[in-house]
Image (tube, rainbow, N blue to C red; front, side, top):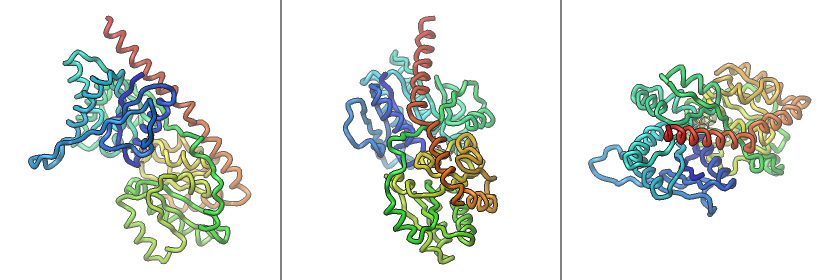
Length: 380
Ligand code: GMT
């Protein structure tokens, strides 16, 4: 199959999923054409089945806001026409689904029928998409997609609850490459960070409000009164400066380290004892899955799709959003030496349920279904 893959090429979860999906499809012999505004990270090498088309936007003094959606739709039209793609798969509804719809209509005018598949990832539905400034366009473009997927049952339900959707939504969860995400021998990192045998807690995110990074610090502070612990905060984003100030004011600088964005996050996950994800909303929680694959138990909120990933009392625990005391109690239970080895083993076992080889065929089958529906409609 020749697939056009449209995503945000940044550190965000939807971009990671789209890139990993494209890479995996390429390995299986499909031709994957990434159409994005910059080269996705992890795609900076040659592979005979992977192609990259950059969306460039003409700069013009009249444009206070550069019309990215128009440039993206034009690039999709160009790539579909000249690379003879079989389908377009857009990740994150805004603005990719409406740009895809526009491209599809233009191609139709030129006599080319191409199916459009939209994957909903989370904040495109639960936060941004609901805003009245986007809602009518999001609803319309989801309904006009030939196939729609969501990364959890919860996100599917949220989509039906908040938008007037007539389409069936197929749930295809996030997946993990266990060849890459596995516990690596990095004991020297552990010795450097925790010289006195402290337990190591980790959080990785894009430091947006929805991630509640402050809760991680509150839990850590209370936990430190009870046992020797260190905290690593990985990633960057709008809330980082606030959280950093919060740590400085309390003289916690030696026990809490901010590592910024890390390309090889699996290296530090490999030496962690507990991953905390206290999110306000989280459609799936890819970062928690990455931690589990590296044998790190997860203490998460019970928001969104997190209960579909993290099994309470098995791979970690779930607490209500903002319930710091619950999180401290559960962290102590996980970090107890008599429990920790079991939680670590269980975390890996749960991650295996989302192994790429189990999830990739779901996308391939969905592509086949959508293509065959389209062909049967054309012959009626
Ligand atoms: O907020 C993020 O983590 C980034 C965001 C995105 O769309 O780029 O991630 C969402 O998509 C991921 C991949 O499907 C999911 O694993 C995350 O749970 C989801 N984030 C939220 O729902 C907040």
